[in-house]
Amino acid sequence: MVERRQQLRYAAAETASAVKYAFEVLAEPLRVDPDAAALRLPVPDAQTTTMVGEVGWGSRPAAVLACPGCGSDVYQHRPTTVIDCPECWREVTPERFSDLELRYLNCPECGDRMRHGRRHPEQFDLPEWASCDTCQYHWELEHF
Ligand SMILES: [Zn+2]
Ligand SMILES: [Zn+2]
Image 1: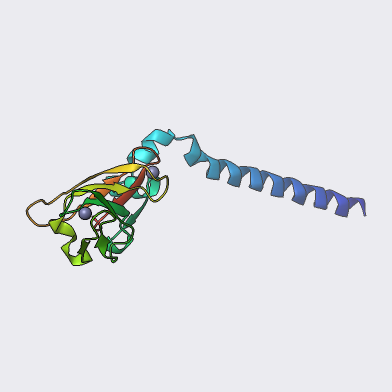
Image 2: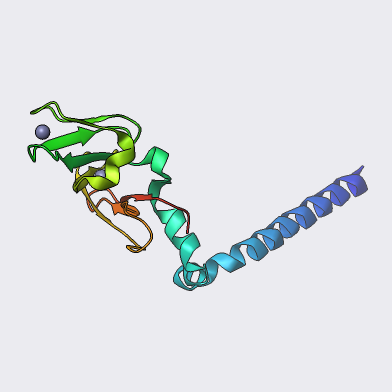
């Protein structure tokens, strides 16, 4: 009986040291400088993991365009809706988006004006990216 109790105690001690060993092994990479680990990520991964955002024309943020008739701000909520001026009632089909002057895109997260731009001005007549400085929301026309 005494012998058996000793065996059990021995087994328990062995398990505890095994757990301790496993913990030390698992914890080991965490002791490496976390900045060094982050720098090893390729740049596109580092961007997509830290940014909130969407890709594609279908998920484009709402746009404010200049009315070609009277110059008023025209709000186009979805990229597929008709661009209709609240002042002069002129209507422009969504296919003609690029004919109009884009004033800004509206951040879907916080509602602020976004910065936007093009990466290939010779290929696209559309905004290719938009970024919100307030909440870091980012939109891209295409995947990198
Ligand atoms: Zn108008
Ligand atoms: Zn925002």
